[in-house]
Image (cartoon, rainbow, N blue to C red; front, top):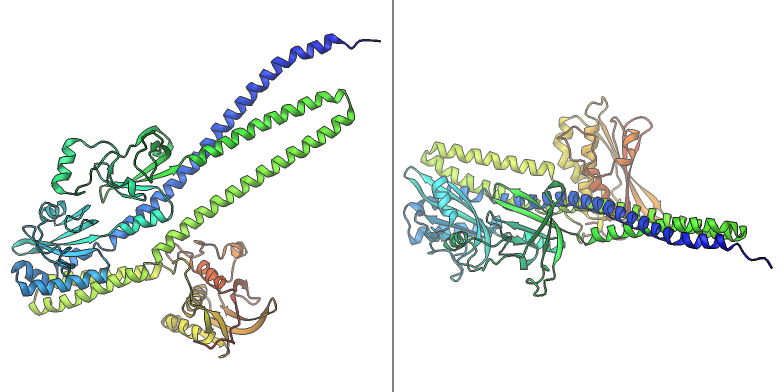
Length: 610
């Protein structure tokens, strides 16, 4: 019986060792390269996201402080405050105490008080609370006092020596012909900003020019120094009592290599505890942005664990791909033995490769979509937090204008023309501020428990037309209205009026250059998926909708108007409002020219109109 060709078998056995070694080397190189590539991509994405978040957090701090920066200057112009500083008396102090209490409550600040030229607090908004009152306390050691006495204004963050509560202090000197006779100080509570950071699960901290953390998303990081403080710095902080009795221990930050865009790899103890005795730490990518007007630096920490996970997954996939290729090559060698076995194995291998490839493509697509959704949601959430303060932003200038008007009457009676002119200029600035706010901010507040009820379409449309009546008359826009009085829809009256205002304004803009300026407004009953509904149409005789804009019309920030004429948010917000009511909003071109926006809302005849 013939023996098998042993020399060939021996040769194959001798080749197994080098082939296996080559396979290990190639697999290791592929895994290493994929790991580095995926890690670099993930870090780049992390850096871009961090820059966006830093911009958002910097804006939130500036907005939180900026809404109160007018208050100290306004207070120093009050004639009762000036009278108290010039000649302190119990009667005048009582008047100013009540005046400051009312102004502080209207503005929503933490405290508002008046200090004489020696640093003694003469009156305060918290005068009713003997344990917390600033009246009678001396603050000449505080930097904001020295700054205002020397330069006219001051800024300072510190822990209150009277209340023990931290805050940001803005001061403004009261100037008379005799010079500086005192100053007004407003204390701003920045705790809500930190609570927003913590509620969002972010890792944010703000440091002063000494590297001391005084604002942070995690309480364990506050009042700790990034690096050990020199003795002279500790002495200076103790003198001003900026952080009162805080130990200002080192945070335990360990700095690693610098990355692109100024980012740096660092490690910190767990944020929810003090440094662990066993040395367990957490790695972050740290990015910072200076706030020069405050002398602060805001830092954002990105967790590196997702980067490691993504890089490890890429390395594993690369290793699996190499092994699959090697397996395919080995299976190809078996083809000499049996064609049937080769076909079955090859088909199995191709099927597995296709499945793995499809899973990888799907995973990458889902990841990209999730990232885009996250960026868009961050934008809309930040705009929502800003719009939620619209009423508060407008009430402050209104309150200030009332105070200015009262002060101006008195100053005019006294013949103090310079102060009258200054007050009138300030009134103009505040009015301009309200105009800018009203013109550019929309209702971006996050969705809350809307009062959904039966709403009269005719009444809501009439309210919207009343708001736009001056413009419609000025631009000679005619109206054709065919809305039945019994048209009732499910929704919120104020929000539906906002939708109508947005659509009517857009229609008026579209007819700016039209010869026939006519708006057709109608409502008719329809059936929507078997349910009764109303279809409301707003038709203009403008230029219509370009084909290229049809699919982007309701996207946030998309606009066809000139720069500065609109934010591109009206249609997006209107679409969201109508959708929340269980309806729909679409746009189409009229056959004879112009555009038509169609709102479909559920019928609500079974509910009494509001």
